Length: 262
Image (cartoon, rainbow, N blue to C red; front, side, top):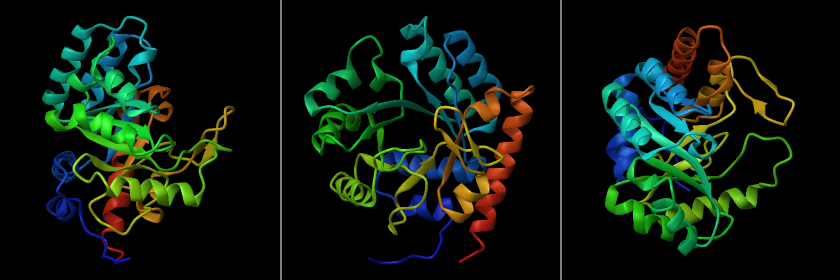
């Protein structure tokens, strides 16, 4: 496998053939933030308030629309407006995991119409390449992007090294649609894949339900991820905006330190 020096976000954007990867790497470089907010709230108003207040600090807003108790398509229109206003991308953390025909309908139709407003979605590779083909039929014409779940931050998950490498090989079959991975670390030397790491807090630890936390420095500097996903570390703070600024600075400092190490 070829090896590469550690490149900047801007340099990696120039190497990408995937439209969404180019867009996101460029956004990271230009906005100088690698912070993704996991906005796990249960009302549309609360989510829109977070998006408006914290939008200037983040590169990606991660949603779970199926936990919203008052979801409407009008909400998604307002969310897209805020994404444009504050220059962040919308990532619906749907974790598709079914046959291609089923996920195609889940992505395009139903009550959520995810493909109409989410820039990025994700999927498990467990069900095989058909899940990517089905999603690509809908997402590619809209220039959307897909992340594959290569690793998880929960204790006791069943993912092993063989699964991870098979997930990478599956991604390589669909470079026009797959932009990267949900992972705890860099899992390929190819510089055009983008990595998002969940379970990030300023102090390492775990919660009562098996979530294991790593620091921004460990995720971005040691494990060579690209984007840190932070939820409760910000949402449960007394001042979420101030805390988001702390995570943004910590993440950017770790990225800058990493760019000097190779």
